[in-house]
Amino acid sequence: MKYFALIMTLFFINFNQKTDKLTGRYNYLIEDEGSYILKDKITFSDSVFKFDNKYLPKGKISYGNVILLDNFINTDLTISIPKDQITKDTIPFYMHDKQSPAANYLDVIIGKGKLVRIK
Image 1 (tube, rainbow, N blue to C red):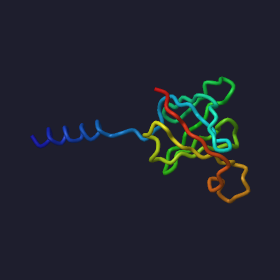
Image 2 (image 1 turned 90 degrees about the vertical axis):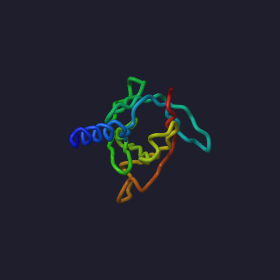
Image 3 (image 1 turned 180 degrees about the horizontal axis):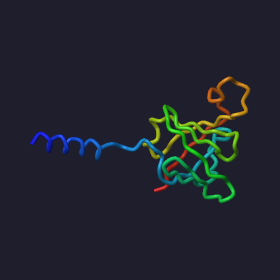
Image 4 (image 1 turned 135 degrees about the vertical axis):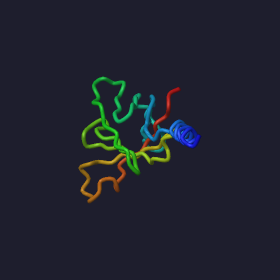
């Protein structure tokens, strides 16, 4: 009986865990002079993302305290997303330039925008 209760407890713990990964399809909007401009659609799956525009490269997602999207539009642009925001339908993000002269390029924000989930 003890083993049955233990197995059931572990089953429900695993069943109720939420994913901490970006999944699904989003529109991405870039802020420009106080207004947002719709750019393209992005599809996230596990640790990669791709644009609907076939000429833009696929990118890699790094999960940690902050979620980083590498190879976003070009190889020098990285997007950071606060981890607590990924469960929302509208996710704010910040753009960083890897070629920034700052010691840590993530400290310098060169732009921002939003990801809006497509349902």
